[in-house]
Length: 128
Image (cartoon, rainbow, N blue to C red; front, side, top):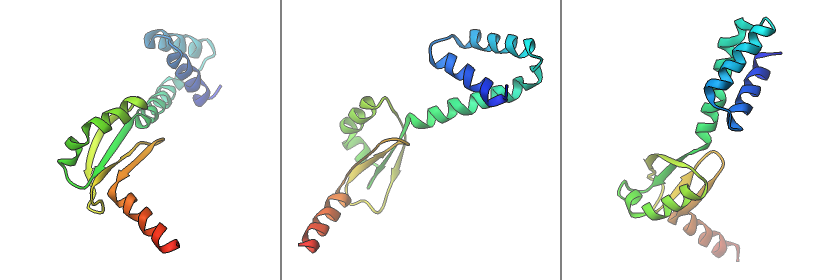
């Protein structure tokens, strides 16, 4: 078996509810059984990378026109993060926004900015 296969197996066991200490001790036993003990460090690095990737999926960046806008839209931001089980990690001031906010994660995006609304109005006016 390769490092990635071992990493995938341990990751699957942990995400399916196996306790981390049990999963790691099982990994050590399997590696020793098949004479692959030297792969342990590589498997652990692969496993760490998998969990870090998962962590990135759970974070959301809030883009606002002014810093105080994040507080003004706190209720809406909380609803979005709760709905998708995300954690707010950063508030960034985006000078291209006139007002409102944009919430972005690796898998979700909510654009509640005035910029989008104005762009939509402009497109509707110029296309008619």
